[in-house]
Length: 515
Image (cartoon, rainbow, N blue to C red; front, side, top):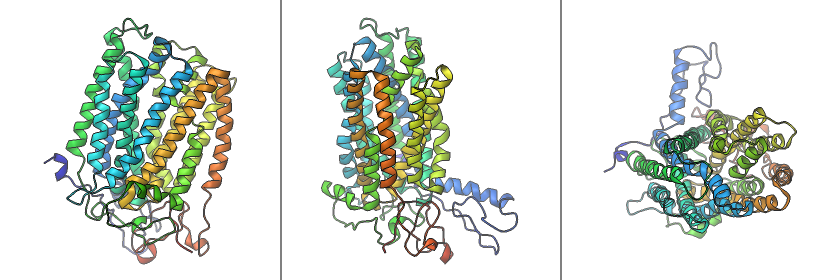
């Protein structure tokens, strides 16, 4: 029996304040009214309890797994673009194809991963952890394989297998996070996970830089002396194995029979039939049942939006190459460029996730792409120097903090628990396929008209897609007038909510009631 089997995935619920004249705030942060509402040890204790309720142990354990795995992955990602373009002489179009493979292969298997995770084993439990373990294991296996391949086709094959592992594990992991967390706190929980994941992305390039220095290998790969890169691949493989062990030992195997954490509060899935839910049966889910989830209005809107915006989101590797060439930075500092993005992501993921719980997840998702548009504009502006590049990287990290976990939290609100893995996989697959197409198109544009012109066209297209996505995700009219709406755009009241003296309804913007 694994250590994790003895751990509970239950998210503790903050005790409600029942004294007259003092009402607990919907977000659990303390009393909402009455004299001295924000003062005193009782309010502080309530805030601490609310934070623990928002971030269960399962989320923290999965965050550690992602942190360790991202250290391994980003060690390789930090040096691979420079190695391929400078050392092997790959063209921008060729690199765009290879970079697109990373998203394309992940997308092809993500639906399969979500489907397999939703299928229940003989004990009646979903297979979220088992499928995620296979995905993490595949990625760990690929790192030492990079020691054995030295041509672009073979490197592409290894990258494809690594991305297959990522595709398998992403939907089950996000499903476990959403099922272990109360709906009203999903934005914060995904923010905590993404912050820990980004800590790995921050440490990965730095570790690669230090390993290259210690190994004495040249940064300009010339095809002859490559011991520095081999050292990076070897250390990356060891770190990836550690991540798999943490998953097996410390992440709980199953939830309760209802598919939600024991003691979890009310959720949009349990709120009765809505216009954004579908009927689910107890039969074993089929792959085509996952595709049928696109009939859910909220999930369909999010998927269309993710595709629109993914078509104009330039990949990180191309962005860093543009930054490096614009400033004329020495290639030995290239692996450090992702640190600016990762640092901003790390600092902002949790507060922006909590903000999404308050103002609406779809609104923040759109605002994040507006921030990305600012980054493109700054990179294309006459401004120059290190300060401009730092601003570009900070805006880039802010974009990820406002969109990555927020999109998963918004999608989780629209999908029944029994199909959570498949629903999250649908949104992620649409986004990944769109970014695959963007990598190919941007690489071709760079080869034809140059990087600056290609980025200009991408920025114009992104502005148009943000406008279109805002139309797709426009707020539905709340039935029953303004009294039926809650902050953040939610129009559904959960049975047992504030009017009944129970916990507040989750503040999301993806639940609707039938007219």
